[in-house]
Length: 109
Image 1 (cartoon, one colour):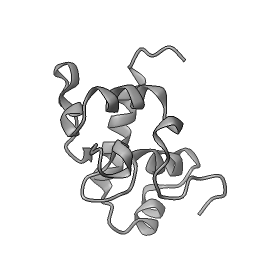
Image 2: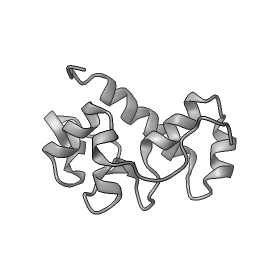
Image 3: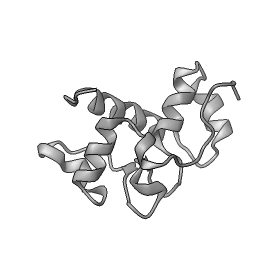
Image 4: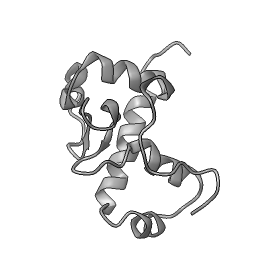
């Protein structure tokens, strides 16, 4: 695993990206996927009882930001799948789709 890459786990709510925090706070469950009429990939869920509402891969406790951090560090799909055996290729693609959606949010930093 590359140094500087987040290990899997959950971060406190105040350490999350403000756009994700706002989105998670607006909706108390996985209904965020239908925010403003946009239907998101069902592989990504947000449950306030799992990782404090952090968006995670469905049926895992692997936060989306962990997968994205590994991609940003230059790891390829095969390496990520080897390090996280519960993930499928479609889960990685769902994380990228989620990131693209979040990047369109208009949030003051």
